[in-house]
Length: 112
Length: 118
Image 1 (cartoon, rainbow over the protein chains, first blue to last red):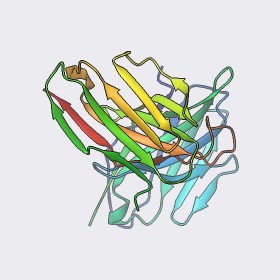
Image 2 (cartoon, rainbow over the protein chains, first blue to last red; image 1 turned 180 degrees about the vertical axis):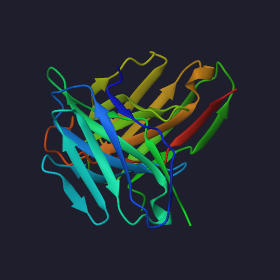
Image 3 (cartoon, chains in turn blue, cyan; image 1 turned 60 degrees about the vertical axis):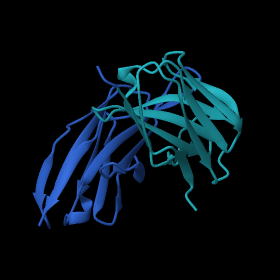
Image 4 (cartoon, helix red, strand yellow; image 1 turned 180 degrees about the horizontal axis):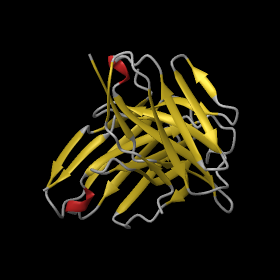
């Protein structure tokens, strides 16, 4: 089983729509969770951290469900500029170390 | 000024050749990384250095050799290139190593070096 799994999409949505997608992780000892954004042929950039209580950053809402081992990202009022691949990142606890594991990404395309 | 810069951006070469990719960060971070992103878009860590010392070495063929002359630089040398080495290689840096709980988890990536092996 992959350490971090995401629905690759693509999610094609009209401007103004709400889109949401999940990411599951395999290691129950995982400590920290993040969403990164990667534009086509660009480098990944941190979008937001995901906190246990859930958190919002403008039109973006992230949730964490530890019991079911998944995190989610919801984008409200989608803009054309939200078109990108969203990477789920999990900080996994190893024996004496920590390791960031990336999902393969969920592609979102917002159309006019 | 670019925070994490890597060169070259594009590299096309023949199987069997040896090539290097250079990376520099001006963020004052102690930790630098090499990641490989293949055609399926998975980002996999290859190496991590903290203040010039190797701290993460994933199962990477020993044809790949990182070198960190100082904490602001981490270069990647690849010997005897194979077709399967074709990918985008990203350099990254972060403030603390390896990323502990409650860290912001922010990695700062370079723009990537797209390697094509023919």
